[in-house]
Length: 347
Ligand code: NAD
Ligand code: UFG
Image: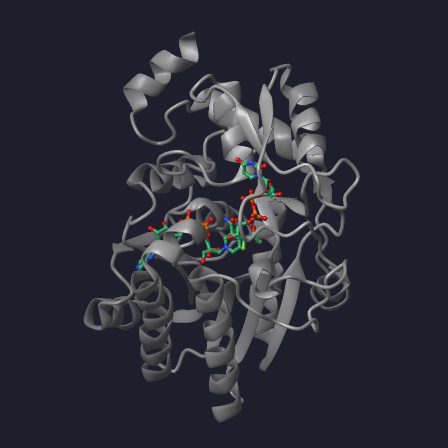
């Protein structure tokens, strides 16, 4: 009786694995390390002192994936595995469609073959496109503004069709808002490749001295201070949303969608200010042009998750900033090099 976690070595996956193990679930992890490192798996063991099975498998490889299902009693799947960089998806769309959509098709085919019909899927607030109002509810119109977002939208529709074809399936789509933060131990966290695209890892890399200053993309939006507003959510709260969702798919059949956010928005400058207060580090920044494709304001109406899953985000912006900073400070090079990162910590 195990839960299969695809993409379990990644940022959200590793935090969710820790919470699943702590909640007493047995898990099997599948990852191809295309955007993660084996070290994150070691740290899951270190933090939980629990055992789990791991397979280095690409979801696109159906026969290798079948082995995972034939060697384990899988009850349900949490499907994180996917590529997620918006800019890169514009440059290499076919790769994104192939990896994200075909990967999901292969997974669902194998699940069907092994009669495993319970699935929690990582979707994104990006499927709301340019929302006309906030807070954003699950019934708002959907659209995509880039290939990454379109891959999520297409997968949502495919999973809807799958449920229509066979109502024995139990599928939950989780639309995440902006995950930041890290485990409170500072042992697992977000480890982006190269220069970060997202705000929080960029801020922490400025704070640690890897980057010189933050570029704030526009200060002429109709917001409190002109900078973009987002619903930042602590990754451990997000991970716990998956514990609630897995309970739901194990207990009932159906097709349900939930926003996972806090319901509150912060501007770029508000986040910078909170980070400076918590960390004591100055974050130099420069206002530059708007980033193409960005929206002004995005935050969730998360009442459906509260009412139906009994889940609410508990951690505030200070805790999010403090935990992101702790992870960055303790792991200045991410998971890259143990030796070098220890040297970094002594400075
Ligand atoms: P991540 O890149 O850290 O984790 C994804 C993991 O999937 C990585 O470990 C990667 O190696 C693995 N993977 C990718 N393709 C694979 C394949 N074909 N076979 C096996 N493993 C594969 O990303 P994350 O931030 O943890 O995001 C997890 C999921 O949540 C993704 O689907 C992402 O699109 C979605 N999401 C993330 C955010 C965010 O801001 N982080 C927001 C909304 C939705
Ligand atoms: N920002 C900056 N400077 C930076 C990075 C970001 O000013 O260097 C600003 C952006 O303009 C935006 C805010 O900070 O106003 C947040 O930007 P992020 O890139 O951190 O996050 P986004 O809301 O643009 O997108 C993220 C993920 C998407 C996902 C979406 C909703 O990257 O994949 O959240 O979940 F779809």
